[in-house]
Amino acid sequence: MGLRRILSDKNPALHKVCKPVENFDNKLFRLLDDMRETLLDSGGVGLAAPQVGILRRVVLVDTGEEILELINPTLLETDGEQEGPEGCLSVEGKYGLVKRPYYAKVRAQDRNGNWFEAEGEELTARCFCHELDHLDGIIYTQVMERLLTEEELMAFQE
Ligand SMILES: [Zn+2]
Image (cartoon, rainbow, N blue to C red; front, side, top):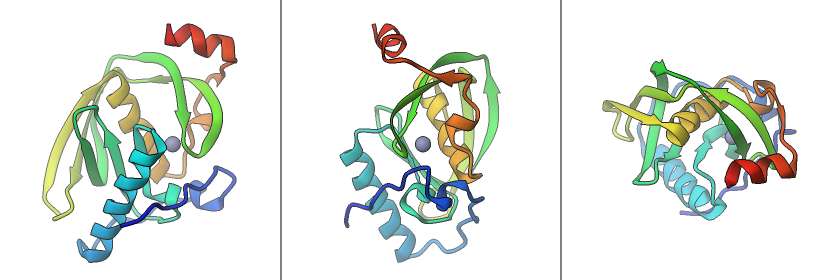
């Protein structure tokens, strides 16, 4: 177990399309354990493998109840819309205004390769979309409407 360094969006790893996970082995377990520790340490709600320099389709999402490990995830269904502030551990100190679906359902494999579905609303739906985008090399700053000022961000938090 160990903390991994979170790369900034200036790193080319953040702009590549990640490959599917094929081997559900000790190397994957170690990556997942390290990513969990790194996510908890960061105070964020989600982390994608390319953010720690691993170009594989692996993300972690903290739903508030548990940390979901999503391997080879795909978006199955979305509904509604939300517009709000979004940040990224790889884009330090900035928040953008991003439109996302209000609800999202994903299908993914767990660390043993078993397929399952997970769904969420609000922040969890936002996080599913944000993290899955990372696997295709997309950062929220490429899909946002604009960056938010400090005052606008504070108004959202009230
Ligand atoms: Zn991010």
